[in-house]
Amino acid sequence: MNPFPKINSARWIIFWAGILLLGVVTNTKATFVTLDPGAIGTNTSFIQDFSILNTVAGSGLNGQSQSLDIFFTNSEFLVAAGFNGLTVDLFINQSGPLGTWPTNPFTVTGYLMDAAGNPLSTPASFPDSGTMPAQIWPDWPYYLPNGTQYLPETKIYESLFPGTLIYGNPNGYYVNPITFSGIHLNITYPTGPTNTVLGGRIVMSGSLYVSPNPAPQYTDYFVFIPNPQLTMTGPYSSGSSNSQAFGLQLSGTPYYPYIFQSTTNLISPINWHSFITNSADSNGNWNLTITNSTSIPQRFFQVVAWPGHPQQ
Image (cartoon, rainbow, N blue to C red; front, side, top):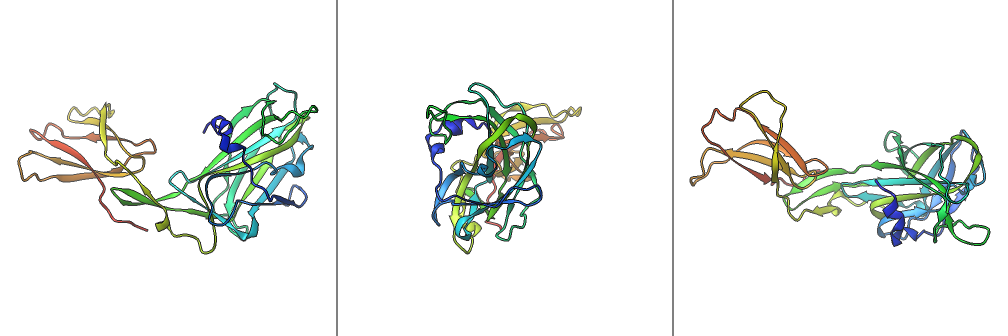
């Protein structure tokens, strides 16, 4: 995921008020951070906070470890809907002259939490997702001595917490939303004593809903698919040495299930036989190998969208 278009977009300069930071950083106890995600019932595509690392601003990079427990104000929780799930980005800002790039990598892991602080999944890695040099950049809360706003040297780390799809009918599918009350982060700093941490930013993006209790049901998250057709984009090599096999390359709606059917003639009434059901991948692609192609004088094929009913 490329973070630069996000930053250039006007919507990314908004930040939520009402941030409260508590606790003292140690290597064994997490720093508690409460973050205001917005009013209950708010639907948004992202939530961000520029104060997430203020408690360690000014500390040198000497290999220390830090843990954060980020909870939402008023015991609120978030619901992330959509098959893209929840994306969490952590921006770590460092000191350094304008034009210089950060060179030392951090190690970041984390997991989503319930209201009691229990993990909802195994810890996920946050791979390095980008590096930005110190540069003049309005609307970031950092200032040069002359008052000019700028962006310090920045390392960006990102992780995806995917949602669960529940297939519906040919017009769309249901999503089992991710419901969480907080995020736990573990950060290990590099050894680079010439630089210091200036702060950071956390961004949560996706189809987000600030929810009251009880949590909305999956039926609240029906995603329409306008055209779930599958089209043939070309043959492909199946890698088989069988001369009676050939491959088809198909393209359709990501994750959507399709039924591949065949018949030996097109004279009415046509008797279509279903012989495989499969889902397109995250890019909408589906490769299919047809075997024993010469054992039948002729065959015709079609692909239809899965006509099933909503499943929980």
